[in-house]
Image 1 (spheres, one colour):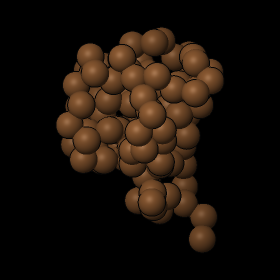
Image 2: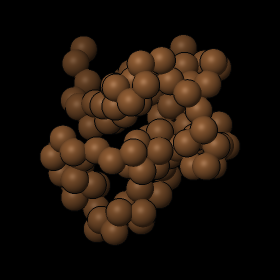
Image 3: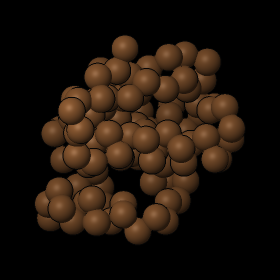
Image 4: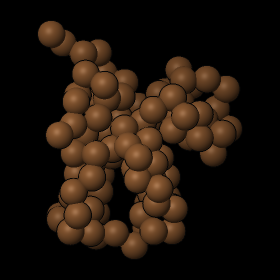
Length: 105
């Protein structure tokens, strides 16, 4: 079960349950992919509300790997999500919120 205080979410992808987490290593991977200098710049990039299919694959892939699931981006791209494109966007949004939103106690 995901621990939101640690930035984790649970997701069903391709009929299997996974825990996703944008760990420091996963965030560094995304910084490098997007050419961002730091976490603030990365967060600002995602705040814009625009998301490509490639963005969704990269973010979910980094979250899966951060959660201990060694799937490549190509494998992530082949996974189906309930709700189609809207389902992918919802998962990415949930993962980014769990990562960057302040935790309330």
